Amino acid sequence: MEFKAVIFDLDGVICSTDKYHYIAWKQMADNLGVYFDEIINNRLRGVSRMESLEIILERYEGSLCEEKKEKLAEEKNNIYKELLKQMSEKDLTEEVKNTLDTLRAQGKKLAIGSSSKNAKFILGQLGLGDYFDAISDGTNISRSKPDPEVFIKAAEFLGLEESKCLVVEDAKAGILAAHNGGFKSAGLGEAADSELVTYPLKTFSDLLNI
Ligand code: BG6
Ligand code: MG
Image (tube, rainbow, N blue to C red):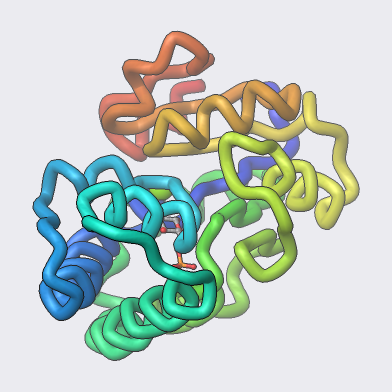
């Protein structure tokens, strides 16, 4: 590949946290008495925690003050963090680990570009706590995808220009963020169908054929 570095989204790319997000949002929504299902959950992929809450509240009759919204997001995150404790090195697939190791052996810099404020905890659970050369996540950004801030910061942490870094995403919002930041991108799942994706991938290890 022509790139010097690869910046990976975390949730849905390096690992699968969808089911934990779903269970946690579902429990919060049930407690609040608001309808929530897997189809609505799909709209939350790549979206920040507070924006996800706003999407869920589209079904809520009435209005809530900011303080109550913060409480609801905290309630969801506490349930989510409890669930994340079940994650371990077993949740890192051989395919992902081997692909990362091969890219590293080729001399590529490897970074994370995730909207999640739980990214470092998740990486620790997967046994990747010290693996990446740089981590840009929900704790160092003020605007979430499709804003490119998280990827621009990752490139900055690596000390590389955008054109030298490839972004890997599973969400269309993430591909748009990469595009907005001047990055080329590789897309998995729904992101492979984005009109803006540079390299649609069938599976993670296809990265090695770019
Ligand atoms: C993204 C997920 O990676 O992180 C979203 O795709 C999630 O679903 C977002 O809402 C924020 O995550 P967290 O862990 O900070 O609530
Ligand atoms: Mg994702």
